[in-house]
Length: 384
Image (cartoon, rainbow, N blue to C red; front, side, top):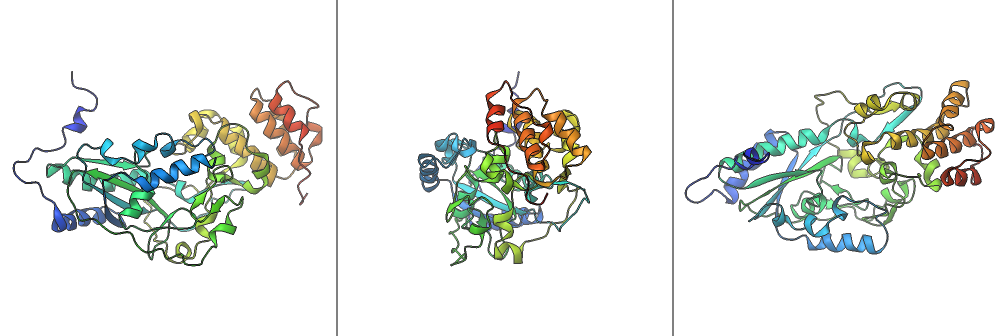
C-alpha cells in the first residue's frame, strides 16, 4: 500500500535532458509568483545558515528564549536547507503583504488581535508559493514549500535573498514597503541566480525600541522573549505579573514595534481581502462561551496544546485592565475565582484586586499558584 505522502512525492515530473535554470527561467518563475499575489521574490543559496545558527545559540546562551521552541528547537535542522530537500541548490523566498485598512467591530470591551492574525494570511501565502512550486516540479526539479514552519529560519533566508534588511525590531523591512508581510520559501534543486542582501536603511532611527511596551528589544535586532508580549500571550503558565498592565487589551500578538516604524507607517502595501477579517474579540464573550466556540474563532492562533485555558487567562488580565466594576463584571470574576483551574483562579484574583472587587477575593487557596497571587495583590486601577 502506498504511504500517505506518496501522492506528494509523485508530483515531480521526470524530465529527460538538462533541467531549466538560470536567469531566464528565474524571470518566468518570478512572473508566476507575482501573478499569484506575491509582493516580492528573491533567491538565496541553499547553504547552511551559519549566521542564523550562531544567533540562535547566542540567544539561548543569554537566556533570551524563555521556553520558545520553533526554530530554537532544532537549530541544525532549521539552518540546514539540504536536510529538507536532498540536493537543494536554491531557496526561492517570497513576501506577501497582510496590510489591510483599519477595521472596528464596535465591541464594548474589545480584546485586540495583532494585524497578522486578522485573517489567515498563511494559507494565501502557501497557495501563491505552490503556484511557483508546481512549475518547478513540472520541469523536473525537486521543490518543497515552507511557510510558518520551523524547518527554515525564514527571516534569515529572506535577508539572504535580498527581500529586505533586518530592522532594529528584528523584522524584515522591505524597501518601500515596510514589514507587514508574511514570509515563505521554496527549497529547490533548481539552479537560479542568487540575490545579494539589501542595504540596511534604518539608519539612526530607533523608534521601534522605546515603542515596545515592555522594553523587549534588548538591543538592535535582538528580542528578549522574557519580555515580549507576543510570546507571553502564547506561553503556558502564569502570565508574568510585571507585564500584565502593559498587556492592555491585547489578546493575541503585539504590533507596536511595527506600527511605530516610519517605513511601515508610510509604505505598507494594501491587499484585497477575499475573506472576512477579525481585529478583536469581545472579552466577556471569551469568558462566557464554550471551549469549541472559542477555539473555532481562534483556529489559526498558536495556543499551547490547543487549550482555551490560555486565551481565557489572557482575557482575565484584559478584564482587570479595561473593565468597569459592574455587576456583570463581578459575576464573571466570581465564576472564575471558583474555577477548578488554578491558573484561572489566580488571574481572576488579580483582576478582582485591580477592579476593587475585594469581596470576591478568597482569604486563601489550596494551590500554591493562587496563594502566591493572594500574597502579591495589585493596587486598585488608577482610573477607578
